[in-house]
Image (cartoon, rainbow, N blue to C red; front, top):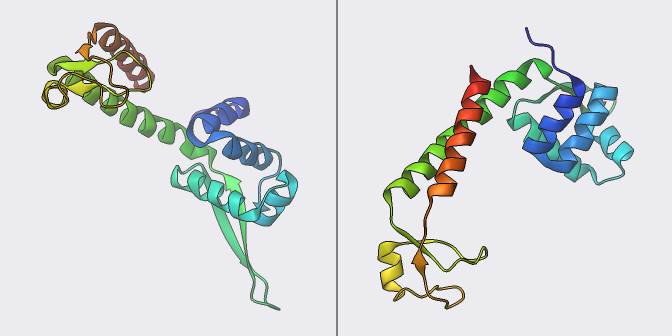
Length: 168
């Protein structure tokens, strides 16, 4: 069993879920078992936004819920809590997905001739697409030049290595 530091949970939640998820997780760390309405009230936001965030966290297996029924009016209440025991496997799963995507990117740039105008707002084009556009950027019209991916490939390999070490 792993010990999971609550401050690390908050940091990881921000990476995977964004600022809204971070606020929800902070509240659930302080007071497990809050309903979506109670979370919305404490955060001062619309309950629909809180539900959307909770479902994003549920998809990542970071939260779980229990349902209670009120007999008088038949109302269902969802009580939410963090699922810390799933955090390690969730992070591992996300790291594996990131490594796979990085490998695909590395394979593409390692085996393709790519052209680019040099502007960060413009996309890179494979040789055939560059020919189709007469070696002019379809976004800005500047001339396309061969793109040297060696620095990017080095950075990708470093990230793959770093993430692979975390998985051991």
